[in-house]
Length: 417
Image (cartoon, rainbow, N blue to C red; front, side, top):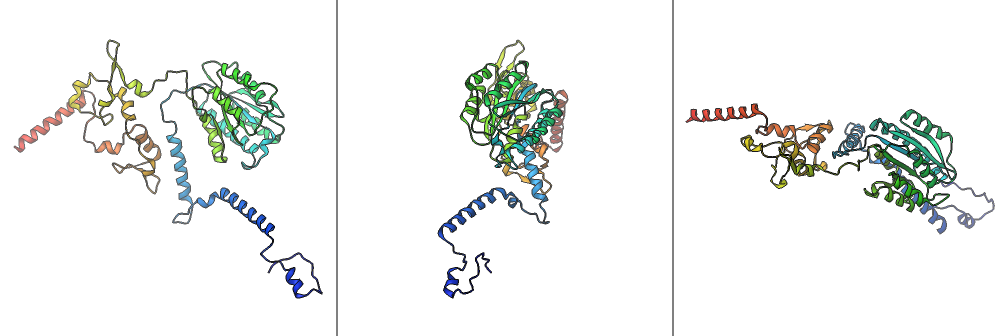
C-alpha cells in the first residue's frame, strides 16, 4: 500500500483520482535526483562496509579471520626494517599539529581533529618506547598563530595530558605554517649536534596565512640541519613539497611527504616516524662493500671476488681448512653471501591451522618470529641444516672428528673387502 500526503477529494471522478494517484514512476527530475542519491549512497557504503570482507569459519565464528589478520600484521611489522643500518640514538622532534577550521571535516571519522589527537597520543607512547632518551615538543597552528602545546621534554605523561586538554578546545581560524616553523626552529636551536633535529607536520588545510616570506624560513631550517616530514589530510600543497625537498636533500622526498588515504593509512604514516631515522652523518659503507675487502696481517687491504664465493652460506668443505686460513673470514663474507641468496615469496608459503609457516624445502613448521629470522634474515633453516650431513668449519675438535669419521669409514671398507 502506497502512502500519500494528498488531501481527499470527496466529489472527484475516477479520472481525477487516477491523475492524483502516487505511482513509483515520478517525474524525470525527481527520478534523476533519486538515482544520483542512490549512487552516492552505494559508493559511500562500499567504502564503509569493511565487515563484508570478513568470512566465517567452519565453526561459524570469525576467530580464524581475526587470527589471520593479526598474524599478517605481526609478520609485516617483523619484516620491516631488517636492513642493518646505523640509526640515530638521541632524537629531538617537534610535532606540529594543524588546529585550524580545516580539521573539522569528517572525512576521517569521527573528525580530523579528534582522530589526530588520538593518534598523536599513541605516537608519543610509541616514540618513547623506541627512543627512550629522546625528546619531543608539540606546537599547534590556530588563528594564524603558532601556540605552544607542550614544551620540549622527555616525559610522555606531560605530552599526553596536554594533548588530552586539546579536546576541550575546538579547531578554528587559519593555520600559519611560517610561524609554526619559526617556533619549531627556535625550540630546536639548542639541541646538541650529535642528535637529530626533526619536525613532523600534520597539515590538514590547503593554505597557510603567513606574515612574511616562508622561503626565508625554509632556508633557515636548511642551515640549521633540520629535517621535516609532512603528512597531509586534504591534498598535496606546493609549499609543503618545497619544504620537504629542501630539508631532505639526501633522501627521496616521497618518503617524507604523504597524504593520508583513510584512518588506517593515517595511523601507519604517523607511526612510521616513531622508528629512528637513518644516520646520514656516518659512513655509507654497506655490508657488500665491507665484505669485498679483508685486512691482512700487514695492514693492507685484500680484494675478494664475490663471484667465487660458495653457494651455501656458513658451510664449506673441512678438507680445505688449511687453505681457508688464507681466505677471508666467514664473518666478513656472511653479508655478501646472504645478499646473493634469492628472496622467498611470502605468498607461496603454506600456513597451518595453528598459524605456523612451513618451509618449502624441508617441510618443517615455524612460528612467525622464527620463520622470519631463519628464512628472511639469516637464510639458514634449522630443518634444512639438520638434513645436511656436512660438518661446519670449526676448531681443531671438529677437524679431528672429521678425520676420525674418515678413518672409521676406511676401516669399515677394509673389513668389507
